[in-house]
Amino acid sequence: MNRLGKIGEDVAVKYLEKMKYKILKRNYRNRRGEIDIIAYFDTTIVIVEVKARRNDKYGYPIDAVNGIKVKKIKECTKYYLYKEKIKFSEIRFDVIEIYQIKEHYVVNHIKNAF
Image 1 (tube, one colour):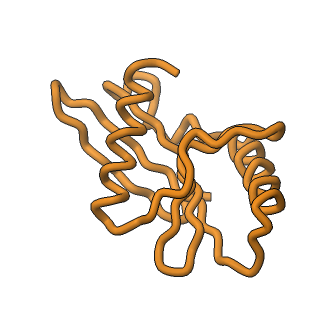
Image 2 (tube, helix red, strand yellow):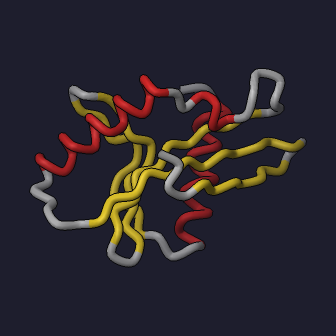
C-alpha cells in the first residue's frame, strides 16, 4: 500500500469513529480478497472501500471501484461472514473517497455505493 493509501485509511477510520461507527477490522484479508474497513453501525455491518487521491487527473476515486473490484469485495465479505459465523445482519457496501488538498484531507462518504 502506498503512503497516501495508508493515510487515507487512517483518515477514513477517524471519520467513521467520529460518526459513531465501531471499527471491527482493518485490512481484512482472506483467500477471496481484501476489505479495507469492516465496521458496525446501528444494526448494520458496513464494508468500506477507501480510495484516496491527490487530484482527479485519473478520474474520481470511486471510478477505481469497478466491477471486478466489487466482485472481489463481495466474495471476500461472504467468506468473512461465513468464518465469523455472522448471520441475519444487514450489510451495506460504502466507498469513502479521500481527497488530499495540500496538507488537508477531505472525506466524501458514499453510502450504498454498490
